[in-house]
Amino acid sequence: MENMFITPMNLMQGIGGAAGTSEPFGTFGTTEKTEDAKKSLFGSIFGDMINNVKELEDDYMKKQYLLSTGQLDDPHTVPIAGAELQLSVDLLVQMRNKALEAYNSLISISM
Image 1 (cartoon, one colour):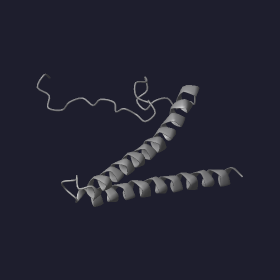
Image 2: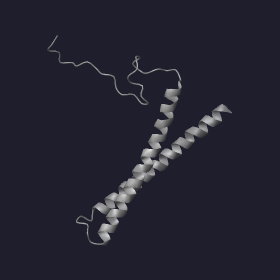
Image 3: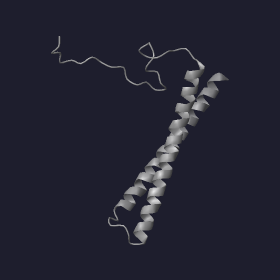
Image 4: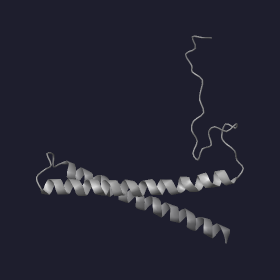
């Protein structure tokens, strides 16, 4: 059995810290700890996306400044940074729209 070519599977890290529990798919009961993890996960997704947009905007502004002062060696990076910024803003807006749609559908279900 020492020359096995199939390695045993390890549990994957679950979303919200479900891995590390005694059950393979985490616990299904709602506790304060899991509710806090869900809230922090949801908030961290949007927080990370907003921080990403801010970082890309700072990078784009820096590259525009360097290009305008003649300090940038490769001017093709400015439109690339602009496209990255535009894509990240579009993604953030679409994620916000989908979250609002999901919220509105949940509200209409409960009424």
